[in-house]
Length: 439
Image (cartoon, rainbow, N blue to C red; front, side):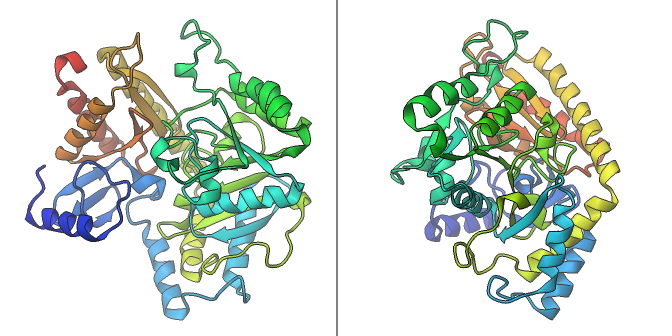
């Protein structure tokens, strides 16, 4: 789908005035959307397999009741400076939100995004433990503001010229597809990351009593939609507990029913000490939340705050969205898992047909496919991945990349079966359209 006149003009103006950021290679200029479709400014319609970066978990432009709640709040009051004054709706929403967490969680901090939620968790873990260091993993993405950027370890362009990052240490994640110690696909994934923390970080780099927290994405998002084995996550929980380290679960992309559970970490049978959420939690409006165990205590007044956290319009949308989840939890869980299995089955069939698909992985409706030059070398097929995304766009399907050569499959959980099949047909057609040597 070639860029037309108005599209080209808007992109030209954008490039002239906006600071460069992470734009997709295909020219989508959004106008409006509803349900499973989005329209550009020329009236072209696209099926959404991106949920606009896992924000629209229940449909493009959110559900009608979520939009209505936000509109109603706008007419009453939009901003209440919640961290200087009091307001009821943020408190009411916080009370509902902690009800979705394990027993013992009862402290909430609201912010505006995932990176702010992780900044808060980073600061809270340090002040709770009085320890200076934090640990995250290779391929991790926790945000781009300075504190969360110290945890991010995904692409060099995200960190280059912004250092030094003094307090964050990094360990290998359980990236089973590329685990150097696996001799075959049937081998259990190594626990190299856990061993590295024990044998190097806690024995050589810093002392056992100096690490405040370990941050983990239950499923790594920007790094490539990488799913660790349950053993890895359980061993990490054990290691943290043994050393008085707080475990922080970054649920920003994987949480909020995306994997069939409100908390993605629940899929691994462990609990964190601090959780962070954003993206889908605001129902389409800017929203971040950091939720901690009550037993960790509180922070001194003035130690952390922000101007727009608990914004009344965002809270209204978030509360309406959470009410929808609570009313429909069982059905949302069921459809996320069943539709996810359907997508996985089709993608695995495609893997059998196309050599370029090296790996398919995911839980629920958070699924990634990794493209490789060939399966023996596992060389990243980045250009081919980008070509597939562009061809899908030309055929009316929007998808997002992840990692060096992966594609994320994250349609709205509420998407119809017919549109899942339609989108996967377009995806397979785009892979099939690659030059034979690339397939």
